[in-house]
Figure 1 (cartoon, rainbow, N blue to C red):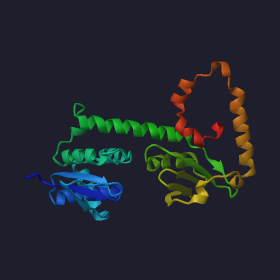
Figure 2 (cartoon, one colour; figure 1 turned 180 degrees about the vertical axis):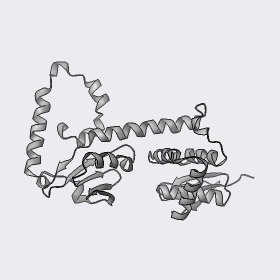
Figure 3 (tube, rainbow, N blue to C red; figure 1 turned 135 degrees about the horizontal axis):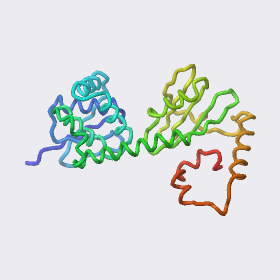
Figure 4 (cartoon, helix red, strand yellow; figure 1 turned 90 degrees about the horizontal axis):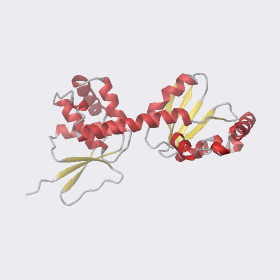
Length: 253
C-alpha cells in the first residue's frame, strides 16, 4: 500500500514556513512536502494540510535552532528562504532536521548535493543584495521625501534596509518592490514595511521636484558626454549592469 504524502500548504511567509516545520515534528509526519498555498497542488497519493501561520510555533522552532546551532545559521536559513526558489522549503527542512539531530557540521559538508544547492542560493542572494546597493536610484518628490522602485529577482528587501539607513540617516525615503508589491519606508530614524500603493509606485514627472528633474537631466547629459562609442564593450557592460535593472536606472531612460 502506497503511503500518502502530506503537502503542508502555508501562506508564503517565513513565520508560516516555520509553523509548517513545527507541525511536521508535532505530528511526526514523514512523507511530506511544503508548498505555498498559492499554486500548490496534490495528486492521488497526497493529501493537503492547511498550515496557519502561528507566531508561538515559529518561535519554538527558532528556539530549537538557536539551541542546536547559532544565530548565523538562522540568518543563513532566512536568506535562503527569501530566494523564493522552487523547492527551497524542502531543502531547508532537510537542513533543519540535520541540525535538530545534532549534526552541526552538515551545512559545511560540501559533498552533499542539498548543501551545495543551499550555498549556491546564498551566493545568488549576496549578489542580488550587492546589486541593489548599487542600482537603487532615489528620486526627490515635491514633498521633500525620496522614492525608488526596484524589481529584484529575489525578496531581498529585508536585507538591504540597513545599508540605506546607514547611508541616508537624515532622509525620509521609500523603496518599493514592484514585483512583490510592498515597500520599505524610512522616517525619523525608523523603518517599517508598508503595503502596495499604486500612486506611490508610479513615479511620474508631475510628482518629482523641480531640482530632481534638473539633476536627472544633468545626470543623463553626463553619461552621454563621457561615453566613447569606439570603446563600447556591450558584453562587459551587461555583465556589470544586467538589462533587467535598466527600467529603474535614470541614466538608462
